Image 1 (cartoon, rainbow, N blue to C red):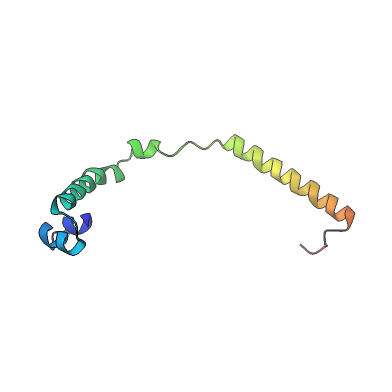
Image 2 (image 1 turned 135 degrees about the horizontal axis):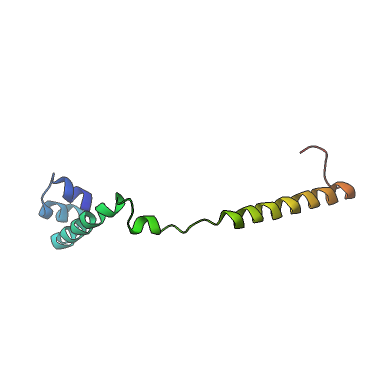
Length: 87
């Protein structure tokens, strides 16, 4: 609705009738969209800080741990005859 209001192809009254919403609500949503649209293209604002920093050292440690577990279980299953040669 807010995008339709921004396009301006129909009046707020027409959009309110089509979407069965009060015109003031559409105007409010349009204002919120226009205010928040700048944040989408903001390079150093709150949007950049919203994603947490990735700790590569922790991730590499977890990958190594899982690789060791896979190797151990593969060897144990092979010795027990429960792991086929086809992988």
